[in-house]
Image (cartoon, rainbow, N blue to C red; front, side):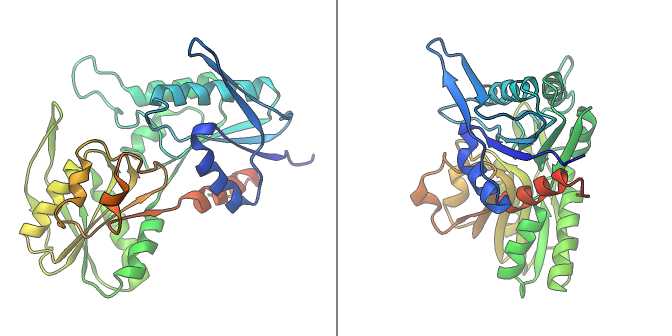
Length: 322
């Protein structure tokens, strides 16, 4: 039986990202239509036949002034449904940034577990597989989905970035909270193999209640070292700033921050204000549209996840191991 054709779509809100993936994959983006109606409703449909095709749809689910998180999620879900109705053999959603992934457990009585509800929405429209990059809680993500779910990690991209630039420094990888210790340990081990140097680990104490973050104890030795604070998301930047301040007070010579998703909500501009942090590195899952370009020049670097996603799509299409 012949292999189904690989067909790649990128919805309009993620068109630029999709073009980078298509270039790396050496595969054109398939044409589609997104139509707006006067009452605020919309529709999306493929413009060419997808019957029997192995289809991949790219849409990163972050909010922006022109489209809310909910709007992007609905558009993606409806398009997946339309693809199945049009006879696609398999539909995979490529979601570099997954919305609502931080609300993955009940922290108060009668709390929603929104990650599980979003997973249910994807399953309801018949998605065969969802591919995302770095979520807040890996176990919660994997347990939420009953369809295929692949969790990719940006860690190798950041290791490549820092190994080239800081190879001869004494490095300490810092987790800004206890929940990130395993990720920090993995980062440190990968960095150690790349640089063939000893890499330390440190951890910040952190408590959050009613949106207020507290805790100021730094466990681990950073004196005389270059500290790299690693996290999955930068939102307001408060968590990174707390960790950076603690590292500086503990004697770190230089401080960098790396996070997969740079949301850069209001307040995050403080990361670039006073020279406390020498550099911030994020991936391209979310463009830094909330930051003033002049503010971040020379301080913010962006690593591309497009080649990694292209490789994953090629492997999934060829039924190869990830």
